[in-house]
Image (tube, rainbow over all chains, first blue to last red; front, top):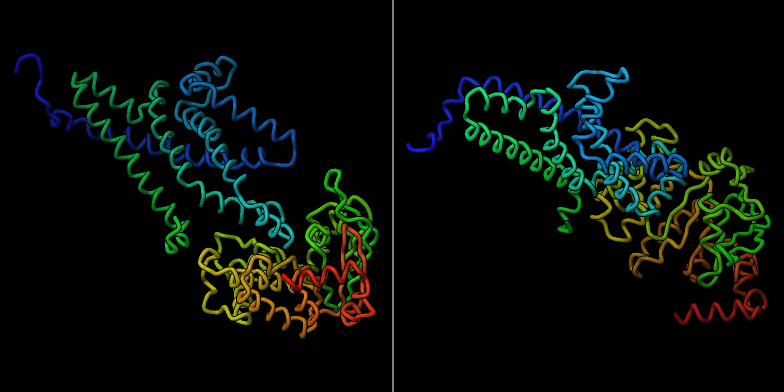
Length: 228
Length: 244
């Protein structure tokens, strides 16, 4: 066999439950962070496009800050920095919050451009029919934004899933973290990282399939007309 | 009653409405004519609160549209149909029509949707009630737009060049519906270029020129040789519109 060990996945069999546990943790963190960034993104986009210059400025500052700092630096600040001034909430919560805040900045930008692309006449029609601002936002603005922006939002969310691997640097044994442990336990980094590659690729592929299906569903009227 | 007194509106240096006085009483159909840029659409947009007045006052049943609190009441009494339909693209025809009754009038959803279907049926769209706007022709979209306005059971219908984006056949469809509404006694403020149609349904014709109200006459008088036609500006406008 010379210099190399044979490629042998069976050697990882005993570690599968441990890896699966990591995968579940990744999934949990991603689902929560996805919901978190969507909430933050919607609120921030509403503020950015609001009539109040002060609120709009504050929201812009948030987006600019969190888009200009590497995620790992934000994460270290939250996990290693904040406890120094007495703020500590545990690795998982810190990870989810950090992902939500960073993802929220990118999400809000996609939603903002979706809002700005809505035909003003549609909003005027809603306004003169007596609908309140919150109702217009919930029933008209956000559904139209979702329709037009589900694909770019999907890219942001896929990025979020990929970025979640960085949570392994704050003692969180999610998928990447568990794989690192198994790799050093078994001395089989090649096999384990092949598995990791396939796992992330499959996960994001499934998500992009879901996004595609959602896009087609939300735009079903245009699909039958053959426009999109 | 819709009442405008001394209404002024400018966009930058351009004065679009220059002291308009106009009353529209219940049951009247008032058509507003005038060439492009005369301020017709702006006047409608001031009535429904989409433009802030720079001067003067507009009230709808004594509710001042310039006051935020009263505007809500004014808007409950009036409904607007737009030139470019402005339907909600993510909702079916029925959902477009039923949204405001559910959200503003608090009509139960089932009832609102049944009423929406009945309205769509009355304009010949029962088969298209579950279609999305992108699946409808321009004329069908505008008929949905009219139903959406009527669903709020408004006392006043504000119509802003609602056939300008339609071809002649679709225009005829939409105008047929307006004629029916006029016969039923719906109060309408009708901004239009459809002179002949305005003549058949209007109780009064108002002519705007360069932001000023030039005449406000009963329809027959407006078109009479010794009435509106005696004024050179109106004669010129009418002859030009008829040539087009």
